[in-house]
Image (cartoon, rainbow, N blue to C red):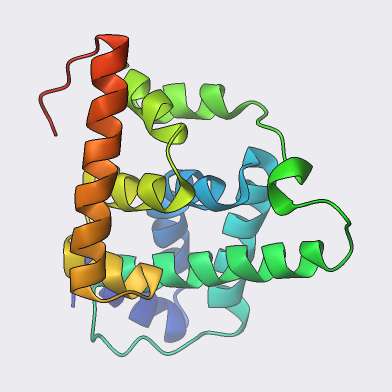
Length: 184
C-alpha cells in the first residue's frame, strides 16, 4: 500500500488533509481520463468532483488488493458510466452527439508541458474510445496492464490485445500524418 493509501486511511481516521492531498494529486489526470469517456471537459470535471465527494461522504473501503490509483480511477470510471446511463435515458440522441469539446486544450496545455505529447494526445483522440482509454492509462498515467484491466473491467489478455490494436491504429494514423513518436 502506497503513500496515497496511507493518506486515505488518515482521512478515514479524521485527518481532512489526507483527502486534500489526494485531490491535489489526482484531479487533473482524473479529469482528462473521465473526459475520454464523456467527451465533455466540463462534465468530466463535475464527475471528477463527484468521485472525490464519494470518497469524502461514503468513505468506501480500500482493501489494498490493487494500487490506490487504480482503485480511484475505477471509481471515477464507474461514475462516468453512471452519468452516461442516466443522461441517455432522457435523450433521443446518442451520447456522442450530445457532447462537444470545449476548453479542453487549455487544461491539457497546463497538464502536459511537452509539445510532442500534446500532439500525440490529439492523434489519440481520433481513435476509438477504448483505444484512447487504454493508451492514456498506459502512457500518460503510467498504469500497468493489471491495473488497466481492473479499471476497464477486462482481463489482462483483453487489455494486452486492446493495447496492441490501439498502438497499431495510432501508428498508422501517425505515419499518414508524417509524425514520428519514439515512445510507441
